[in-house]
Structures are given as C-alpha cells and as structure tokens.
Length: 429
Ligand SMILES: Cc1cc2nc3c(=O)[nH]c(=O)nc-3n(C[C@H](O)[C@H](O)[C@H](O)COP(=O)(O)O)c2cc1C
Ligand code: SF4
Image (cartoon, rainbow, N blue to C red; front, side):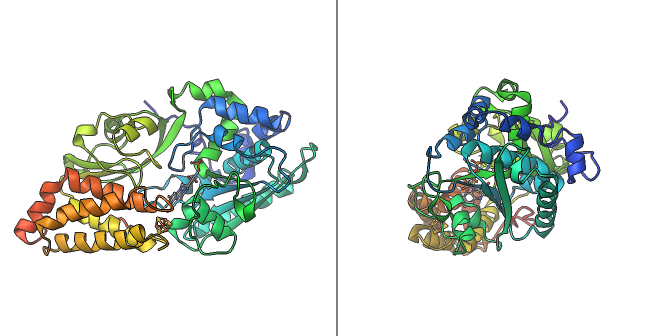
C-alpha cells in the first residue's frame, strides 16, 4: 500500500513552503469556511473526527478545545508546540520546514474555534532553518491578509508570533513551554490547574502539537466522517511514523493509525539492516517502554500501545537489531534524561542521576547483581510521583529494558565487561 499522504501532501512539490505552493494545494480555503461557521461548530467537527493529539498523549483535540471557559474576560491563547526534542522523533520538523502554511492555517482555525486572537509558535532552539521558514510564512500570511485585522472581512483578528526556545527538552512539556514564553526558566507547573483554565500569563490557553494542528484544515475541508473512516474507530486518521535505527530505509511515513510494527518495518522500512533480527522496538520516542520481537504484529495505535504497557507517543519508531547492547541503550537514555531534568523534583533529579551512574557501571563491567533490582526499585519510585512526565519518560524505557533483557545485564556483570563489540544504537543524544 502506498503512503496515505494527508498532511505530507507537499511531498514532490517544489518550494512547498511558499504561500503560492500552499494555495495551489487548496490552502486557506478551510480557514475561510471555518470563519463562516459558529466557533462551537468548528470544535464539534474536530470532536466528531476523533482527532487525538499527536504531541504524545493522544488526548482528544476537540474535547481539549472545549475546556476553554466560555465568556471569559481575559485573553485566550493558543500555543503551537514545535519544540520536538524527543530522541527518535523528527516528524514536526519536516512539516514546519516544508509546509508551514498548513500549520498556520490549522492554528488560525483552532484560534477561531476557541476565541483566541493571539497565538505563539514555540520552536526548538536548534531549528534555526525551521524558524526562518516559519517567520517567512507568517510574513507572507500577513501580507495577503490571512493574519492581522479583519481577516476575510469577517471582523476576526489574529496575530501569530514565533518564539524560539533555547534548546531545552523540558520546554516541550506544555507548562514548561508556557513558563519559557513568559521569560522564566522552563520549569513545569503542577497540574491542576490545567492550561485551559490558567495558562499563558494566567489566561486560558490551549497547547497543541504541530502535527495535530496540521490535520485541522483537512478535517474542515473533507468533513469529520472522512477522517474518522481512516485508521481504527478510536484511533482515527493517519499518523506520521518516524522510522529510525537498524533499518534499511529510515524516514517518515504517513500511514493510517493501526498499521502493525511488522508492516512498517518490512513494507516501508525495507527490513532490518544486513537481514538481522529485531531485538527491540521503541514505538513512540525515547520515553516509551520498549517492545520486543514478540510484539511485531501489534498495531501501532494509542490504545494498543497503552495496553501493552508502552505508548504511541510521537510514533518515532526506533528499531534495534541483535547487535545492539541493551545495557548501553538504557545508559544512554538515562544520560539524556539526567541532562534534561529541570531539577525541581527529587525523584527525577536524583533518580535520573542514579540510574545513569548504575547503568554506566554495569556497562563498563563494574556492576553487581544486586544493582539490577536497585534499578527496578528506583524506576518504580520515579513513576507517577513528579510534577511532569519527564521522570516517567526515563523510568519507563529503563524499567522495560531491565525486565525484558535482564539476561544482558547479568551477562555484563558475569563477564565484567560489555560483550558487544559494536553497540551501534548506543548514542541517542
Ligand atoms: C518532557 C516532555 C516533553 C515534551 N515535548 C513535547 C514536544 O516537543 N512537542 C509536543 O508537541 N509535545 C511535547 N510534550 C507533550 C506536551 O506536554 C503536550 O501534551 C502536547 O504539546 C499537547 O499537544 P497535543 O494535544 O496536540 O498532543 C512533552 C511532554 C513532556 C512530559
Ligand atoms: S519531573 Fe523532572 S523535569 Fe519534570 S518537573 Fe520534575 S524535575 Fe523537572
């Protein structure tokens, strides 16, 4: 089956980032259509489509929009989360570099639906090219009157500003992102209150991912039933899967939600390098619990992954083959999260530090058998006990690696060294 390109429909178009190219592909028609509707009707359409957030948690988008209080006497904000710093995830970057107007149109429609006249796009600091492209697109949209005052003579006003982060993973967490836009350190806030009640500058705010927003114009143009008919009943539409690791054809593939891991690897990824066997799969970015070769026939959707004790997350699917050292993978993950912890919570600040220290010791042949259970104990104390989910994002994959590949830890300890010559998947960061 070929790719099902809804939000990757720019592939093959030259200068797809320009307004001319976007208009050629029917751009901004959905915004015009939306402005002729009641804002609640727009939210209802998105609700009916079943669209779930593509930023990680899979939360229903229309429902999130409906949490904005009615008749509020404060400004309402929409923040587009373009921070994309999760190791293994590289889908948003292509959208914002190749088709920024699609994202802008999604933002504009979302703003209209929630009664917002000001939106911020928060882009990861290490994406200077993306920032340049987005700013160019914003300027073009203002020039044509798609942004600014009295858009399409409807009386609707909207301003969009680009905000560049300084390169911290934690600023992708929605409240860390809000703190950062406010000019503070990117330290997540305890929830509740949720941003829809108390968000940016204390005002009601929706935070949505780039990919989520990119779907919105297509849902308005084609109708909610069209979108809901793609994928599975509770996991509707397509998803951009980012395939990487020990794979012949790594890359982005837009496919209906629910495709199996095996189909993704064999039919699109061209199989595992050197004809090797799959050892482990990280199905949703570095924060997801790892799966094994026994799980290859599982559908890659939000609910199946949750049921399997993992998560679809960003659908950054990383494949590890039989040559990969799983202790080294765990150590590298812990190293990343230790570096990126904002330090507010003891379980996260200390937990990530200790996990990395113990894992490094085992990888370098200095570990003890007792430490294997200490790792599991530390992971259990980190999960669900902190302000944000970064600590879980470290504990979940490490816990799964220790449980599913315990024999590799024992082998390292018994040998007093790493038995792998070529830990090719070791460096995620
Ligand atoms: C540590 C951490 C990092 C995150 N990074 C991102 C990110 O880079 N991009 C993103 O869209 N969501 C990220 N999220 C999820 C956001 O908090 C939020 O759920 C998401 O932007 C909501 O958008 P959605 O409803 O469209 O999925 C992160 C969450 C955590 C805990
Ligand atoms: S879990 Fe970690 S990153 Fe999140 S708020 Fe606590 S210390 Fe900061």
